[in-house]
Length: 495
Image (cartoon, rainbow, N blue to C red):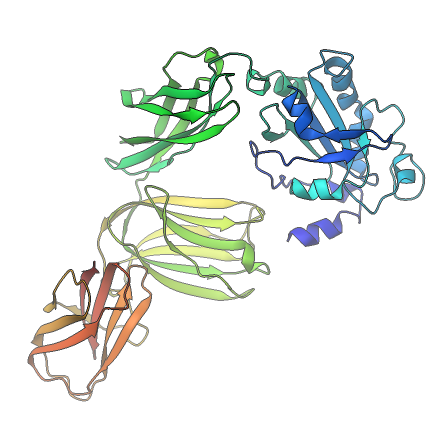
């Protein structure tokens, strides 16, 4: 939907501002740029950052009403006067006209494509024809206002007050490096979904805000019950370099806050702690799920995925879905344990279609309702945690009658199988003359990998078949032998 939105920006002055957020996430590295302002002066972003300046970038368009209204408040002028070259000399501000279809006359308030004289009374540099820079920052609307700290990471500060802007630029984490040792615990980067008693992977993102290389630090995770883990990290980070540190695993029994603390010596204790919430799943499920999705007019923006406790995708929707179309998939997760289901929208405005997920017993009976999206509300991601407690291998087949009955008595050998043939032995075969049947092999997601038809007459007693496995990747598989209303299911491992 991005191109549609960008095309609509010029229709109404009111339309240049929206409730959407910029697509460049906070704390992303700022794309570098060099540009010449309307007075012929060249400016290089990285040179300003290297000199220790914080930089505010106001992406606006001359025709944009909300841009003009915010410009008229004079907040960026006040910031520049207080903290620019004639103030504390810690800040630089730039107005970048992000619509290359406007003209220099428009900036001076001349012509129909302008809300006023943007140059008059503006003490900081104005850069025209900045569309390429706007695109590099993945801008979607005007105005978009970023603050870039000396460490080079962005934050969308937006159309906020003088005090709010000043709080950002005066935050110690936005100051140039000045102490030998200064570790910034930027964010928690581990799992926020857990299951009772399950080992949950923990991680944090750090930055070296010190002037010396960072080679070691100690990080502790705790909750109200006490210390959960302590991790000693070693490595090498130069000034302003970042790293994601895997801390190990911790066990949670209920939803609640936990705390991450830097416990090694540090010159700036103000940025040595953070708090996050662990959501412990109480929703029980089996390994077998049915995912139903009705796409909207932009199917390429939407996808779904199951993730394990480590955040790895273990099943996901295929690509190339059609618009305004209903789909249904059977998904068989590889094992019991802690998982989460995620509905994702790459543009961030949600989907007008729908999505539902149910957990099932053998034969397709519903065990639990897991997830529902009814098509309303903007989102980039919706998720639901679940605790898979029982193994189900009976992925239903559309050809089976609803009266199909599960039977045992199916042996597989060798199991695990390394290559070659897998032998299927049916121990309690029943006479089923005149009824068609089949042998199927499905992977852990429920995707059919192999099928072999059976004779229309199957005699009673022990019977054997063989299945080739050479082409199968390593993993867990489900074998189904169906004949009439009898279904036999077993699993095997391909090593």
